[in-house]
Image (cartoon, rainbow, N blue to C red):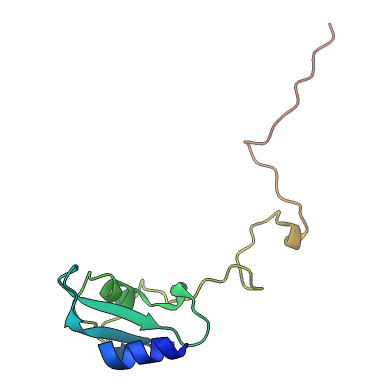
Length: 119
């Protein structure tokens, strides 16, 4: 975090909350004259990676909800939030991907060469 970010946070924002990944969320002390709302921002824990923002906090940052209920009800169908795994060893690689041998099963959409029949 740069010194200017620290100064801006200290002067213009107050901490609103923190998520399970250690990201800190801030809300402006004054209402923005253009937006007519208080600005909201996130300070990432570690590398700035937007996919580390859980769904409830994402909704709060984008003004979809006004308050975040910590420890709210988890539904059976809900999965735990995962950050973007692209570029890591845990990224999804479909069958036929070069790192999985490069061979995939044949499918109906594959091209069949036309061969003339000799009569």
